[in-house]
Image 1 (cartoon, rainbow, N blue to C red):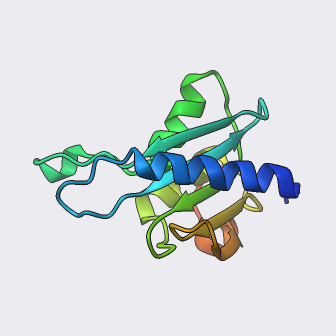
Image 2 (cartoon, helix red, strand yellow; image 1 turned 180 degrees about the vertical axis):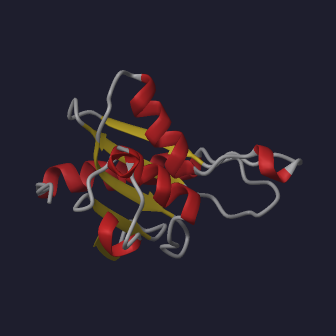
Length: 136
């Protein structure tokens, strides 16, 4: 499991809260922010972006992960998700996390005050997962 220092954990939480404020969620009114720690040890953020044609939107977790990957990273070391109530990532986001993160990758859910609601691992949130190594 990636060991997060208190400093890195707080930086991830702060970034997720910042991106939660940037969410474009006029339909659900459920703003989500996410921050990921990538293998370059940089933090990348993302916000959920809705669209009137609902399937065309994108979750904050995937925006943050794709942001990191687009900066030439291939591995995500930790994820923090901020919502008003500490809501959990959807199944699609968990699968994308699995593509780029190890089963023991920390996932932290926080509420809009930044209080930790849940600390888990990818394995804990997506048991018996299917990943790239299963295609070999």
